Amino acid sequence: MSSSRFVDDDRFDGLYLNVAQQTRGIEPLLDSVFSFLRRKTDFFDGPDGDSAQAQAKVEQVFAKHAKIHDESKKSSAKSKSKAAAKPKAAPKKEEVIEMGTDGGFDVSSKPAATDKTPPTEKTTPTKTTKGSTSTQQQLQQPPPNETAQQSKPESAATSSDQESSKKEGDGAKKPPPPLGNGGTVPGKYVWTQTLAEVTVTIPVPDGTRGRDLNVVIGKSKLKVGLKGQSETIINDPLTKTIIMDDSFWTVEDGNRLVIQLQKLNDHEWWKGVCQGHDEIDVTTIQPESSSLGDLDGETRKTVEKMMFDQRQKAMGLPSSDEQHKLDMLEKFKQQHPELDFSNAKIN
Image 1 (cartoon, rainbow, N blue to C red):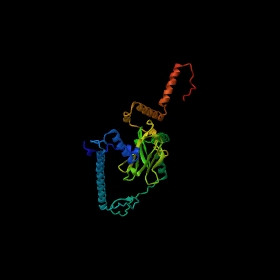
Image 2 (image 1 turned 90 degrees about the horizontal axis):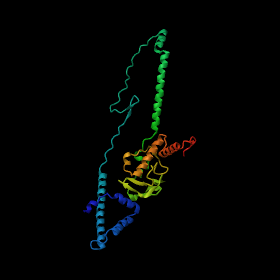
Image 3 (image 1 turned 135 degrees about the vertical axis):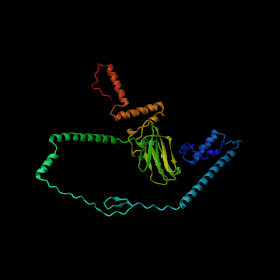
């Protein structure tokens, strides 16, 4: 098998990033690689039982990747110099919106027309006598009974409109389900979650590499910052406990830091990532039904029970556990009709 196909192979990046996160250093990372080759393969023996050939192979592979790195660096420098040499386009002239003569905004390119006031229609005054005026008022005023009948439906329509607007207002108070079952902390990060893990995405300056960051993932605390800067991006306790060994971080596209936090309790939703940060309403979370099929039987049963309890709580009805207690009490009542349960209380 040709080794050239593995030169730029990124299929194992996730695995190596996890190893790098746990070894925390170049030399420990290389130690783990050579430890594997020493313990699990005959790499150091070589075809003739000589470790010198193994060392030569390592140097050969190192030289190959060093050459690729240098060529890539030179190519990047050339592209940057070409981009800098290109003349910058002249800025477009901004379109000016002027105030028109009538007090509105004039966006036309034509010169403003002179102010010409249209001639007003001449109205001829009408003379009315006192008697004709009173007669006209009587004709215009509806009978008393008809006025009362018209006012009733108008008031009823007004009250119905108020009730409908009130219902619409009550419905508008409930927020929509959060995107990705997570939220946003302005100026810091965006996060999403599943029942098993939390993903935190933090924007970082372009060209940022892993060695430029200071990321510490603790069991109940998260710290994120850029090396050389006194102010940290995150330095707060987590809202829930995580599994450290299964949590890791990586830099994607050189401009964002992605942190994967594995939940210790994978049967609950998080309100937020860190204590004191913006929280979401977990009762509005609507997990897609298609994802339930990917869960094992026990986990799926727990998730469906949790969703059922949330719907019952929203409707003011008893949860599954409370309903089970009520059913047991009802069964006990039927078995013992001689007992009085009128003052019984269920805890």
